[in-house]
Image 1 (cartoon, rainbow, N blue to C red):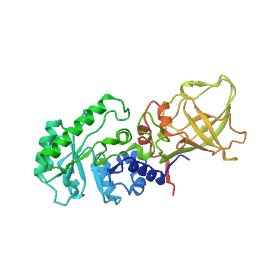
Image 2 (image 1 turned 60 degrees about the horizontal axis):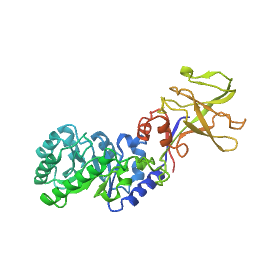
Image 3 (image 1 turned 120 degrees about the vertical axis):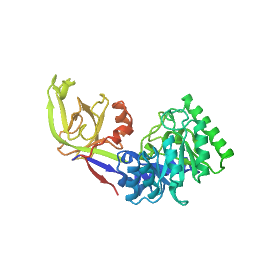
Image 4 (image 1 turned 180 degrees about the horizontal axis):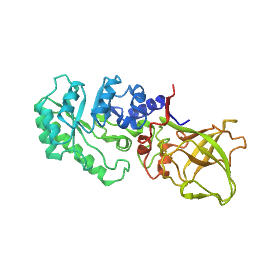
Length: 369
């Protein structure tokens, strides 16, 4: 059986690690893209100690409200139409404003005084060059929004926070700090700031400001290039597993799988595993990719290399080092504690975010207590 197991206790543990790293900041826990593939309904109960959650779209925000989340929800891409702005007002949802049409919708249709939509996250383009106003645009927008009765949070996004030494980080921090000071001095001293994503939380502890926005770190993956998840005391919030469905010995000089990419250097004991790219396991991986197999007889764990090309529904692994009594239906861990999803991401020349977010609907989903 293909199974995605979500571990709420790991999520809560990781949130607590964030709170230790940024003890004076509020936490906007990012649950966009179906909680990075973990399932928003599965993670919300474990994130109750967050001050709010962040999503990418209004649809995600409305789902969270329907699931009973009654604290802050921030839509980090903002709304896409005036109708969505009006829906955000009805559901007490806060939005990022990053370009002129959104600004105009907010000025044309002002929420009630106590509405959470009165809190606007004003996006400043400090160097990422995706969303956001330039410095002059932020000042003009802030003046108009403040005059209309909005409370403001200045926000931006790092382009290279995972690499602490990248020179753009210092420039983005400087730009953000200077503009926030300008806004607080000239418009309203109560304007808040939000700079740090997961990597920024780890790498720039002097610049956490009022709100931090942890994402991948909540799910147990390392957000920086020079520290592992273990070094950051993070726990994987997901285990992705399958089962051995067949055993066979491949003769020496015999190839297996599509494209015949791997040939046995000698007679090799192999197992077929019920997982593939149709489930979200990466099709393109290098020869370092491995799984952990739990032997049904002795409950010992064995590291087994993935052989050949990943197919839609199955992979082949080398079980030569396992006991002769290796059984059908033995559990195979694709990622979890070992291997960690960060390791498999390296083998697939991608990042853990992509692997987690592209999991399909086919695997059975369960939760630990």
